[in-house]
Length: 409
Length: 209
Image 1: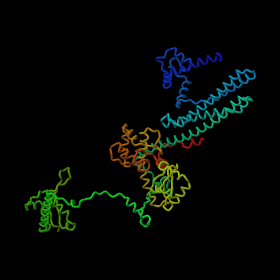
Image 2 (image 1 turned 180 degrees about the vertical axis):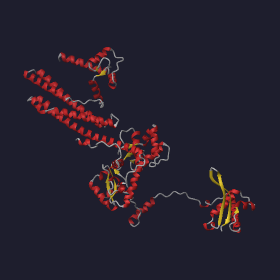
Image 3 (image 1 turned 30 degrees about the horizontal axis):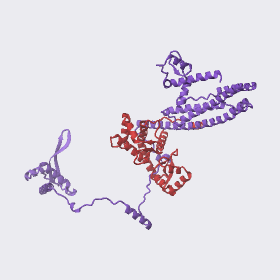
Image 4 (image 1 turned 180 degrees about the horizontal axis):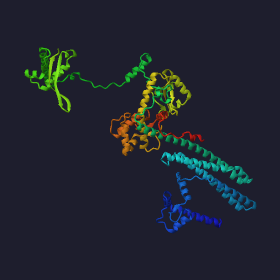
């Protein structure tokens, strides 16, 4: 192992360890604007800056995570809001070309070790390129499968979907940059280069291409669904607002048009009713069975003897008084009939004259109800005059003071 | 035809059949031959099979429109128009209460308990629910939140917008009739030229492929 290589290993491992040592602080920097510096000593800060884990845009501003570290964290967390998609094909191709040239140079000079080194770097570059496509595609699938669940608003989802579609277009543009005719010319007859840059790469890239097309198709479908949902929400809120503003709104009667819109032609319900039929001997047995299976109605047995109407002495008394009142009123009606026609008798005067002991109110009430209880033809034989007045100037309730009854002429 | 007996009965009873309300029947109905067979069967009853534009829900239409049929359709249209505002307000209320970013769509699961809990915690939702529940379409007589929510779900189930897979469990599924309702709204908007925000081109995205 060369000295250069061992120094590289040592420094790299030290700097990677910095990430672990300051993990919490770096994560705070990931979620906020700046990396919090309290409790961090100068030498540690210097190390972090030297390793390009952190950077300071200018003297006045705070210390921030470097873009690469931010990207690494986003990648590790599969944080789809911040994951970057960047295949950067053009630069890789540039690098591949120059590596191939120096590889062939080393081979023609017989420098085996350098040749091996160049091949290793070529392999790493091709792997990186593949990895970047695979990562980008993975990130796209993640977003798609979660229905862009990392943002809550539909409008944000539409924007995120749009962004993802643009990324796909860039990735596809990147893929289109890779010209296999050029690569074939570049590698010539070298077996290991041919295997690495032609057969393997082509196989993988065509796989990426298929995946990208598939994601793109699904994203477009999803976008159409998002848009449809958005259109629905708008339609409904628009209609609600309109109907609230115009409470009397009635659309025209589509059912009266010569051509009724299909949507409104919904036929009246029809009940497919059926009743037990006894005209088939076979079925009557089934019906009989069904009848037997009916649950017996649960009526408690009633003892007939106890169902005799019960009278209380008070009821008897009240009924007797009612009967007496009725008879007295009938006598009053007979007295009216004995009078010459058209000469009214006051009900109250009759009550006092006859020394009956009914309260005035009850007496008047019964006289009126007797009149109203008469058949229409007999009612016409009498004239009932009510002596009444309003309860007060402001109340139209009418109080009856007396009634006078006469035989109609 | 025998195997479609129960389906025919439901259609004749005026039901809307969608993939949510009857997955199996719906699959049969997407088959042209089955649809033709059912249409033939329905001919003497002056009915035919119809669907919404999207083809997500099937129902029966009159084959010949006579005076009585038009009379019935007019009455039905006026019922639909009268129930439109409460139904759309309910859709909005559900969306807001459950914090969803889209309107309830066929297949969505709704739980009255969750809905009550969200409305209970929020005075403005509570008031809107109260107003909606006492609307004559929903007709709740109660001033208790739970009873109002129960009445709302009950009426929506009666009208075929919701389905309750298990009678003893308070879980409801939105049916395809919601699609029908939204198409009705869209139709009225277009037909009456209502000044409602025009939708964006829905087909533009698919056209890209």
